[in-house]
Length: 330
Image 1 (cartoon, rainbow, N blue to C red):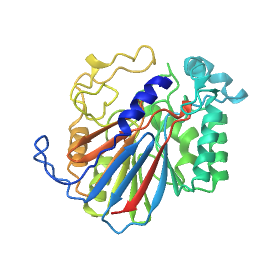
Image 2 (tube, rainbow, N blue to C red):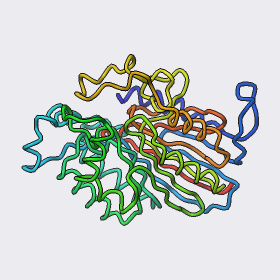
Image 3 (cartoon, rainbow, N blue to C red):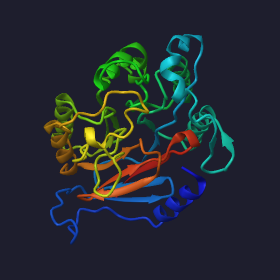
């Protein structure tokens, strides 16, 4: 995001707002009964909850687009060239200086340590392609912080552009070959971490869709009645937003796929989303114990509220952006 656009977004966000379970004229059918208040000022989100929780701080990091490589990446240059040349230099969102993606990621982790973050939530496109060198570098940096973390893939993390195979096939292949250590023995498609009374739920929608086992996992989190935050890469559909909010978007499909040739991948399915993806969407926005959704992918800071559930999209970490999420008792 250009600096002036970030400042504009920050000014709007700085006004703040609350998400509470009261019905409104625009949302009379809201079913979210979890008592909580959500506010956002620039890149700092605060959630007050009446659940039994302890004050906690989560750093949300998404879309760093690291393209660090070494000789092991030479056989894959045909598939990594375009994204390997992207995000070489970026304007830091705070200082306005030129920074590399490596500098942005390191500075964000340092800020997390300084602010005593309790957890790091990485929601995909940390890598521009599944480079062994980049993955090893990130693992080392995360371990150095000593801060617990969760990771879920984005659509670039497992994608070598032009390589044959469906999104699901390529995701499975490069998860097993490269990304697996980042999951800390958890299922790559979904995981949940407990943090001071809050469940941090990670679900991989990097192929824009939801699989049956992911839907079942979400339903288990809802049935538990425990307050939870949902972390994904691609934001859930919000009316009026772009196709970047493509998970659960009613127009997602072959006709709306404008980037498949540039990204050299299979075109989206002609018939659109599966019933499972739409069922997942409905479950999320009717979850009484969901306090908020956090995603990336679009690279621009944005927040929307549906059924009194806020969805915050963090700006891209390639330019140093992150969101600090504070959980506090109401």
